[in-house]
Image (cartoon, rainbow, N blue to C red):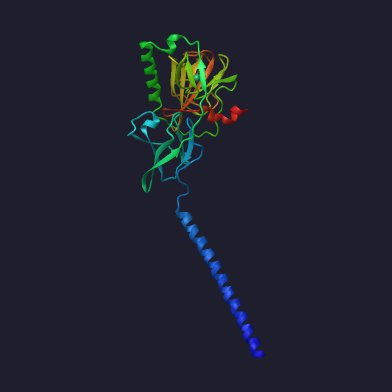
Length: 309
Ligand SMILES: [Zn+2]
């Protein structure tokens, strides 16, 4: 009996010991796995190429790169080169970049990511947008179908702006953009709407029209440097172009007054001019346009919160 008890006790002790070993092994495995994961984690890049906002036609998309990554696009996308030319996207000190999606972009946009493995193409799906159609009648015939002299002027002015948009200095990503005309009465024409001018279908509207009385103050919506000041463009009249860095430019058309000079550094909220109807315009308004290099993007996206109020 005594022997039996001893044997039973031995079995219990053995079982407990085995059980205890099993628990110890499990715990050790768990700790080793954690250590391994930690080691893997510290050897992996902190972050890698990612897009931070939805990708839609006509939108400025925000993204981020790892410190050892570089991003390229075909020159054709920037509207300043041939498709075969590859341009490096500017990145700020936090690894953030912007990418302008054309209004009529293909369903998939290809960018090229360079990392330690080499250069790999990345195909980005672009969401479709339904654009409004806008019928505008009563424009003077000469301004709808310009004569040869006017056509030369239009081409020269377009080239001037295109050239100005090819180089961009400074950092983008201000915390928020403010409205260029806080006192606007209504948005008389949104970005991207297809205009039918005197019965002729034109390209999508390149900016947002803020209707306001002549003389209403126009302010810089974000910090930047004045790149172009023009006293009289055929379509846009008195015009200002501001460089905000990283390829992002804003332009102000049909102004009645201009209060800045070329190369002047402006701060968000500085008065840069006044609303007017110079150039091709049927009434006083600010035609406000935002581009990423040569790609027109929807400015309303930058003020989504302000426009809802
Ligand atoms: Zn307009």
